[in-house]
Image (cartoon, rainbow, N blue to C red; front, side, top):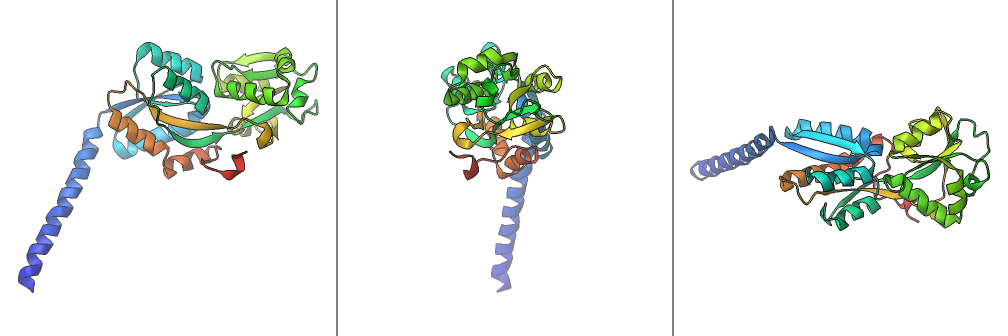
Length: 266
């Protein structure tokens, strides 16, 4: 019996060593490699942590460039450099697909949920999207051409039939959601449409009013690989990591509900 058992154990030991060695070689191959990720400005907190964790696990130098989605798309068009694109919502990703900048296939990670934010105490008593259209309400909004929240706002106001009145009340248009937050926080506006995560980070300064799902235009954050990446396998590995349960947990930690979630489906 021992005569037969020894060769089997030896073969198993060799197999285990081979698998372990292959894993080590694969890891070593990533050492010194770089990835450039184009990330929406509003995703900075979770993406910075995801990049850090990914770097620790795979030894990859992950560089992130943040900005409004429109600005990031322009950068990709101009430079044809970079590996991954993660905007605030699907409309911006689909725009990049039309321009031939990213793969058609992408994964969904988390929700970007528009809410109404007002100055602390809500001195104007605003409660609904229609209230934002009242004369004299000063609004800070994201730029439709540059931000995911700007595009969402356009859809929300159209649903409510207040597009023209909203345009008349808009006193500040931000190229990033962070500029909109600053405009409201500094008293240059009475209210703004922000994503829930951005509003909650400033809940000591703002009152937050949720928009009913049927009246809302809820964004879902996508991630995909550029068409000009020089390392598609590693880029896909990063995208898969960000869209994994571990990546989604990091998004949830920073206030983004993970996708999918029935609560945010109209």
